[in-house]
Length: 283
Image (cartoon, rainbow, N blue to C red; front, side):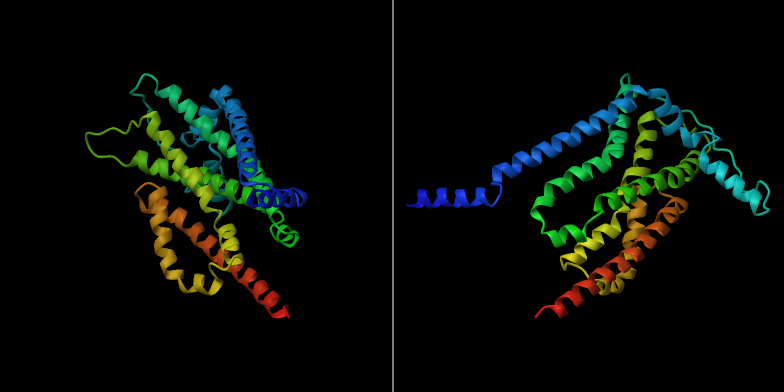
């Protein structure tokens, strides 16, 4: 009797187009596999173009013609300050201490650049996995979420690369004591560049996180407003974690993070108002 009921439940589930637990696992595995392939493809392209990736991209903040330095110099001249904001990055030598360090860092950089380049596709695969389980109204509400999340992530990565990285690297390279010469290893330099970009890109997803947490009723804009002072402390802590231990870098990171927190409050307020109006309209 129990076996017949199981067969009947399976038949009804198939008629409704529903998937079993193991089918969900198999489907998730396919999405993960395609995401891994995308990372591998983009990472392979980066691995092949070693000279461009390292000389132009990774070592870019060391070059005097880096876009951030050129932009500041143009701004300085445009507002009548002459060349007061123009500066040349501090010269320092990058060394390696292990035989396979260059190869390992080459692979490391290629992987993370593959992740950054494939991030929109990874989000798209994740969206295709969860989309069938959403109602039509829920799909309309979160329409465009892949594009918004991708844009915020890439903007965060760009902010970390063009704003945080050059100032932080110059500060750290210029901070010295008598008898010590700044000669960072390739591993140290690449690690800092990774810290300046990828965590910043993920943190820039704050408004999206606030949107979904408000949507499911976990947080509200009033609670976000009441915890504004606590948020400032948390933002300073996060800025201290993802940046070198200097006030300049932490301030550069902390200001946009606080701005994102205020944007998250506005997003949360808009979502909560809609939820409240929808509940009032229900019979």
